[in-house]
Image 1: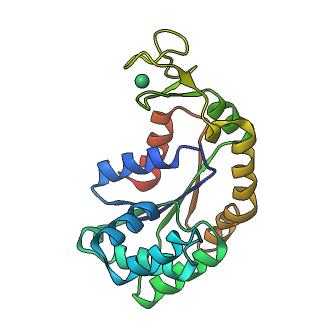
Image 2: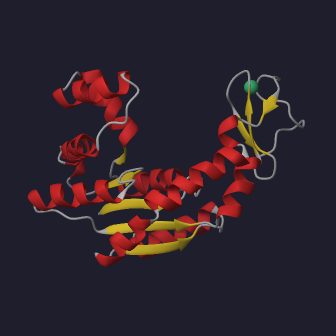
Length: 214
Ligand SMILES: [Zn+2]
């Protein structure tokens, strides 16, 4: 069960990826986690990645891909794995396909969680975070007991810069330019399944289970 999660930032990919990983007992792999693990263990790939990150530069596609391919060849990935946040661009997807071909593997499912931009902007604009303890809320879906006050520590709740409409719109623009073409790319491999991401989290998960047959 080799799965790639596709969908705009804020579509709920990460949440669904974790749920699938728990259900199917396969690792949920994000590039951030791989970077941290390799840097912590001081691997050769980790050292290379760190030089770019320390310089504030993007880690090159080939190196990211080497890290991912190294990760998916570890013992816990024999039954499958879920890639979340990689590939992000066509060159990354091509590098991944080539690297997988070289070890006689290929991706099996690309799960596209489809949510219109305006829904994502609306969702994000309702998020609130505590300035004290970092707890997160949502004005509609998970409101605090007292408006704008943290249930846990009593500090003020704010809309983070990351969740502001202008920031979200910038991220969505990057997604449309660089990442959305991946849907066509994996469509050509015949592995794309599109799920209506405007449904509740449980409905989205139920659709995914049907697709995966689990
Ligand atoms: Zn708090």
